[in-house]
Image (cartoon, rainbow, N blue to C red; front, side):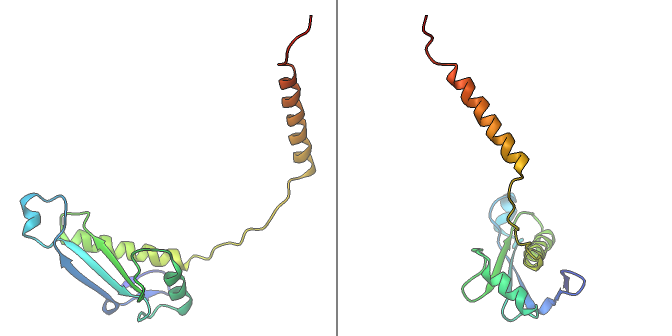
Length: 137
């Protein structure tokens, strides 16, 4: 059971973990041992609340297929246990990012004092540049 927040939990039966051969570090051992982990999580079939499912499916993430299956490949570590922990951690982080509410931006206007200072700095800059012209004797 993977605990996301206090009230959101992903059951072990919803996550499919399979060991595959990893690429990269490991020397000769990499050709013999299946140390990488392939995590498959079907978002539509999960018990997550519907609005979290919609947010996950709306993400522009290439790890989520058109059918709504999230695929995470973890092969950073040499041991299968660490790769399993890494894959579950990445799944947890992705779901947490979908649970956060995004604050709507409130449009603001610059204050009168800020406008005045901006105009003054522009005038000062213009005056400095006008002094750089040709000098008549």
